[in-house]
Length: 319
Image 1 (cartoon, rainbow, N blue to C red):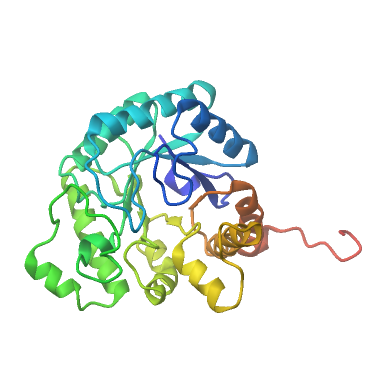
Image 2 (cartoon, helix red, strand yellow):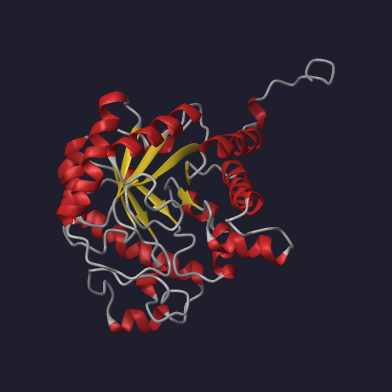
C-alpha cells in the first residue's frame, strides 16, 4: 500500500513526473503518445529522480474543445504505457482520469493511485472503484465545475459529465471567496469518499492550481497550503508551466515566448521556484514536467524545512 505522506523518503517532497499519452496536451501534446516514446520519457524522469509518475490519456488543457473520448480509447492510451513501465520499475504510478472504467483498467495494469481532477464528482462510480481496489485517490478542487460561468472557467473544455452541484450550490459558489469555495467542494468530495468506504489515510488533496482561476486566486490558494495540512491531508500540487506563472514573468519583463529557448526555460525556472516554496512548506508531492530542475529546487526547500536535522557545520567545514 502506498503511503501518501511518504512518497519520497526521509520526509522530503516527492516529485511526480508527467507523462501525457495524448495528442493534444497543452505542454507536450503528441510527444509521448506511443508506448515507446512514453516509456523512454518514463526512463528519463526516473533517472532524473522522479518518485512517482502521473499517466494521462485525455487532455484538460485550457482553450481546447471537448471531444468525447470513449473509455476504450483512453484505456488504449494509458494501459499499455502503465504495463510497460511496470515491467521495468516499481515506481509509484498514478492514472490521471475522472472515468471509473479507465481507473479500473489502469489499476489492474499496475497503477497505484487514481488522480481525479473532478474530485470524485464527475463519475458516480469512481469512489466505489477506488474502494474496491483499495487504491488511494488524489481529490482535486475543480473551480471549472464549481463556477462554470466564470470567465476563467469558460476557456476550459466542458467534459462529458453532468453538473455535480445543484443550482442553489452554484449560485452560492459564484459569490464565495476562493479559499471558502475550495473547502465547500472538498467537503462534498470527502463525503462521497466516506460514503464509499474510502479511508482518509488514502486521500490526498490537490488545490487545483491553474483550473478556472484568476491570477489572484491562484496566488491566494497557494497561501492555503497550511490549511490542507492542518485538516490532516497530504498535498498534491501541480504548478508546472501554469499560465499565471507566465503572466507574472511577463509583467516583470521576462521573456515568455515558448518558441524561444529563453522563454521556454523561464517557464520551468519559475515553476521550480514554486517547487522550492512548496517543499519548504512540507508539500508531499509536486507534479512537474522537468524533474531535474525541480529536484534541485525541492532540495533547497526541503533543507529549509528540515533545518533542525542539518549538521551544524562551520564555514571551514564545507565549501
